[in-house]
Amino acid sequence: MRIVLLAVAMIPAAVLGQPRQDESVVSTRPAATNPYLTMNSGELNSFFERLSAVSPGTEVDEVKRMLGQPFSDHVGATKEGKFVGRFLKYYMYKLSKNLVNEKVDQYVRLRFDRQDKLVNIYSNVEGHLLPPPVPPLAR
Image (cartoon, rainbow, N blue to C red; front, side, top):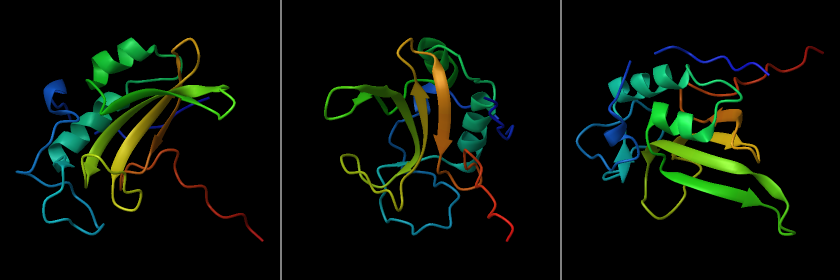
């Protein structure tokens, strides 16, 4: 499995996942008057530059060292208790602290296997979609 990321500049780990209201994320999505968390374009570029150094098989502790503490770190399971994966989530824009808004929130989610090795990366951040959108099939 090969992950292609855009190389983009560095942000202190202390600001990742921290509430920010003084600068806004670059977005064409509807703006809230007072979002819980935003990342400015420099911070966004820095995060994706560091993310570009992360590859499949990287251990979860190494990912946290490279990217900083995530907004959330949890183990997913089915109703029957079958392991789905361990997930780290880093928000670039979050409208509400305690609510998820899939239409507005922008984040990067990293999934790990039972051995805490990186399996894949998903991003819904504008300009940094991962995996990249698949073009429609030719008819």
